[in-house]
Length: 545
Image (tube, rainbow, N blue to C red; front, side, top):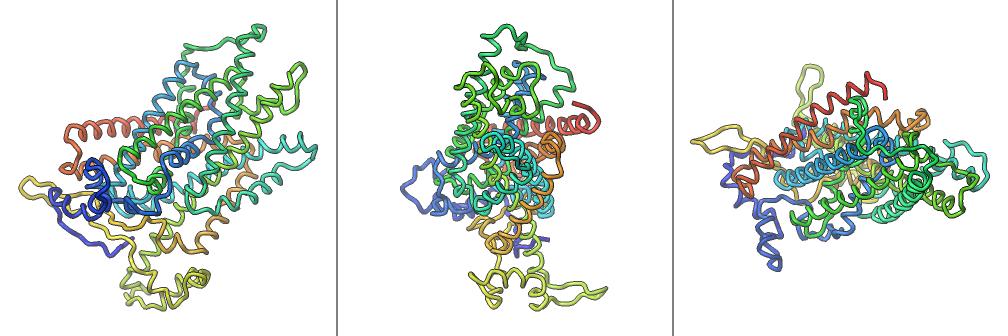
């Protein structure tokens, strides 16, 4: 049990407003902010505080951080979706996925503000309890491990022919992957999305170059060269199996929910309107770029698109191909390789944080046990027992602490207001807990510890490398994670947490009618996602693409 020396209070909703005003620094301490911003922040629990100097990302940086999380390896499979389902149906599918993602991100941010969670796991914990935080952190960790494996497979497949063609070297693909992984280690060791902001700029620009190349070549082949025999399928009626194969891909294409809380935590002046702008701009820009990429790849590949569109693009210059088109595709291939390379640290960061959040749970649990069981006997815990469990972390972190300083880092970083299920005279009490933090979870001891940070990073990357070496193609990875796990992380948990937290905060809502509408939308997404996850998983397991 992750015990924060929590205070259990029976607090009616109508009484929370006074208490929470002290937890929103911008609402009560900064008189220079507009009154509307003061009202917005009055019910929010933000960590770091609203006006903290740790909030270094402006709207531009925060938006690109989210765009870089969205645009990853799955974009290379979108041309296959256009081919299987036609332009009109794929367009509707992508619009639906973009809307559901936008709504899911907003639900996570609002739940984080009202419940006080400073990570994806803590948002779920606020809604469903401490055990769910540990379970969700494990789910995120496993999911992102497979994503990183998929990215490594793409890096190997993209860069191996480039190195062999450009440098005329006969090098094994696994060796190239190992060299690139070592080069990326300084980025992988970074502790915040803000530190990776240049990855976002370079990666987004690089994939844009390939998008231009695909559209240029695609329109030339499909419109100007009628001899190809390729017909654009605008109103194709896809089969049920094609729909169940394609929709999880469009869902994964927009998947970024695991990073949105970190984006909000780093955003300067994080009013709800500014947070909404970041999400709106990121989803809009990502939709436009991925749509043009998928359409251009479909037009270029014609009736034979591969699961990775780069496999349709020859690495060597073809007979009759003009030099400009060849160079543009070569730059586009290199650009896509850079995009996947620089996106891998964006996946490694939340993967490491998910694992460290599990360790954080165990760390707090062990430090707040008053008794332990030895055989069938309950014995009072002593400091020596604590040192036996965690002294390796203290010993390997001597630059910032010593073993004698250990009691200092045992102190709680968060206070929790636990739910009370009682009701009195029609007044509803909170069912969801509130986590009151002055610093985000990333400032907890386990996250700051050097051994935990570097050791977990190396463990994740080395394990993923071994997995990538053992996997033949990226389609194996996407088919494994694309259905059930993606639906759970993207829609089921955010909408379920939002419903639980909002139902506990009805008297603090911005407006009764607006809140009821939001809860109805959340229920629709939840039901649709549960059914979609179940059906798509069955198709992935028993069907054949």
